[in-house]
Amino acid sequence: MSKKAKGFTLVELMVVIVIVGILAAVSVPIYRNYTQGAMAAEGRALASAVANAEKIFMAQNSSYRPVGTVTAMDAQLKVDATQNRYFRDYTVTVAGAAFTVITTGAGASEASGINVTYIQPATAGPTITDNL
Image (cartoon, helix red, strand yellow):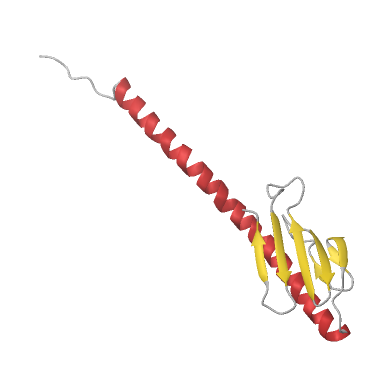
């Protein structure tokens, strides 16, 4: 009477390890892209808030307000980015009846290198883009 061995063979364990490795190789880049897209959403929200503040400033003062690089808070536009996790700085450039808002991910965060640009042309609707 022979006893049957119980457990997994080495080949079965290696097959499982290969399958897990393939799944990890596929899922990690997808997850990284997903998280960067979520980070860029904060940048789009900041750029949109600054653009809305510029439009309010235009309605009150008949011109857009050019802003150099702002860190966290601008007294005139009253856009507070101090509570943001990834995007705190922005720049506004004005060209006549058009303006552009650019915000870049904070230096040491995972969002560094992500740029969000909001362009408000003089005659058409706005466009908002990021470099992802």
